[in-house]
Length: 253
Image (cartoon, rainbow, N blue to C red; front, side):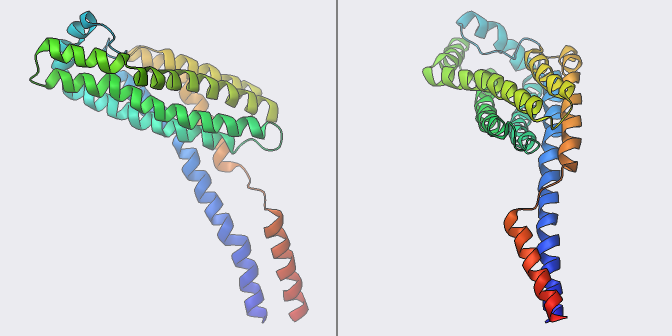
């Protein structure tokens, strides 16, 4: 009986804690990964090929550039796609820092941020992958241009653009408010996160993208450190379970 009691207590205390620590590490890793992928992708995107094509004249101007840098265009947008997916997870990871005060705001930010990340993936497929595919196809330039304009100006495309830009703005502001109100991190770090996302999101491709994304990267790394070291509170059920098993073990002895 004593052995069984000891085993139950240790498994209750240790096994969930190991899962929680693994979850925290995976969550925290999404922040610097998102920053690194987005910065590198922004650095490699050919200049001028980071905006949706909405007119035939723009398409005629960008298709030759994309054709000359097709491989680079595919690879850079691949990094951006994975970076946006990691960014969507990052909002949920940051929400784990917020307890009690502003927890509802942080949860809303995580949901909106995840949706914005998904919309961002679709948007960047429309902007980058479609352009690279059109530039390397054997279609007539006019036909390729018309397809690109149609894809980027359709009603569904506009919805994804709004979901991406609007959702990212809302999620960033809500996250900053939640971090600020909860005092889970220094208030300057909450402000740095909001400013960093705004600067990185508006940065043009090329070396300037990396320079303007430095505040974003710093904020993500510092938040990741906080997430990886945050203490997970033991639930009431687990605490009562440990207490009951401890009492049983003591009685058996």
